Amino acid sequence: MREITALIQLLAMGQIYPFALPDGRKYSIGVECYDYRSGETYCYVLAWMNEDGQEIQLGKLDFSIWRDTVHIKNTEVDPAYKRMGVGRNMMQVLKQETGHPIDPGYTTDEGTPFLDQIRKENPDWFVTPDEPDELEDA
Image 1 (tube, rainbow, N blue to C red):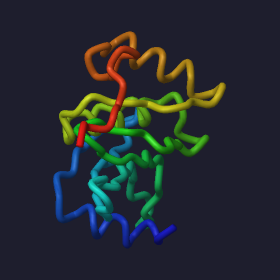
Image 2 (cartoon, rainbow, N blue to C red):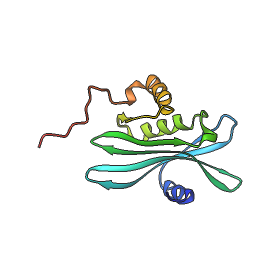
Image 3 (cartoon, rainbow, N blue to C red):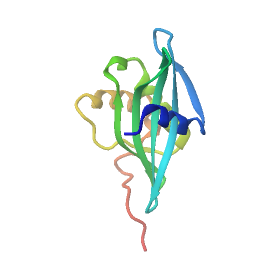
C-alpha cells in the first residue's frame, strides 16, 4: 500500500470533504480513482486526519465502478476510530461522488450490522436483488 502522504497528495487534486469526530477533532475524506481496465474503474475513498504534524489514516473503502454500478471490494476503519461515524461518512461520500447504485458484495460478521443500518437508512442507495448485474447482449 502506498504511504498515506502519497495517497493524500493524489486526493488533493479532487474534492475533499471535511468532517469531525465526536470529540471535535477534524478529519477529511476524499475519493481517488487510480486505474481503468476492461470497462471497470478502480477507486478508493480515504478518511484521514493530521495530528501533531502526522497524517493518520482512519479508514479506506476500496471500490470499482462497472456498468454504472459501484462494487465495494473492501472497507476498513482503524479500530481506534470505529463507531465514530467514519465508515458512515465514507459511504456518504462514495454515494455523493459516484451517484451510482451500490452493490456491497459480501460482508464480514462485523460489517453486516453496519451495512444493514446504512441500507435501512438509505434503501435507495443500493441495488436490489432483482437487479442482476448481467452482461449486455452482443
